Length: 442
Image (cartoon, rainbow, N blue to C red; front, side, top):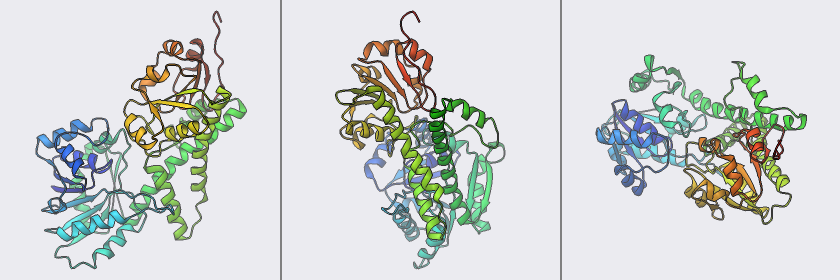
């Protein structure tokens, strides 16, 4: 099939590359000419595991093209995906201006009937609004709007694009549903993905509901961490016991710094505003966000307690991206913690395997190191802020030799506390008892 993609970000790029891999002819468009030039030369605009290889495959096979011209996207296409951003307004509602503009641009240059797919996360009712907006144009072709929300995890977006757990498509048009089913046929059946079809509003709402519920699990784990700390219990073992129940599941029950990134915070806020506009006070969503903010403050206080005074103390912050596997630092809890520590008078030196450059862009006052060792040199406290695998294998005895003061605040419960103690560190985890440094001979 001939497929168009408008918007080449964390959703549009993996979608385009994956569809090309499945055998479709894909033209992906973005207004950023520098990004397009870089992509056409095989350079990625952001880090995502396996993305570079998948894009290279598409380019080499000529099934994937990048352009700045929307006409090239719509020309001959059966399906065009809208993958543009929906940033939050000051009110918390999603700003849908880019979605509207993208749909209008495609409609104005379409050369034949096509299915216009909303891939961006939008409030329920957006598809209906798009249809009404497009009715004002004297279109020579038929455009059918459907909702096909993405369920991609940053850091695993390529895998999730090629091995989705479910494909959700919302439309009242049997013809459009059939087009979408043909598009995704290689992923269905033996491909393992579950096909779910609904009306447009239900599909749009399901995406917001999914993100809100995952955020709820994260905040529940962090609230449990506070209770466990007061009770002298271990939140990891509590989560293991909970997760053994298949009705609950273990994923997203890890206590720590909380969720971050571009999607969860804005989608939770937009969902809350949507519920208010519809007449329902969904106060649980406010509490999810409050507990998430509390998680960063709780870790800050652990560091403050460990250091006594933050002034003239060097804090080595390992991990700056909002999660491992990505260089995305947007609304990263690691950077929120860094900013809080800097405001408290500490010198913060961060290191991340992929996100150093983005972290300095988002938090200009932050110092970054080129290696873990450089970050630890002379530090008073080591903080695990993002659970990159590289940090789990940290040589603790070598780290102890580099540091001025031996303290670890493990905000992701990544390290072995007993091993840290044996290496001479006082070890402060989240939601479980702290461990004192073990003395020589103990």
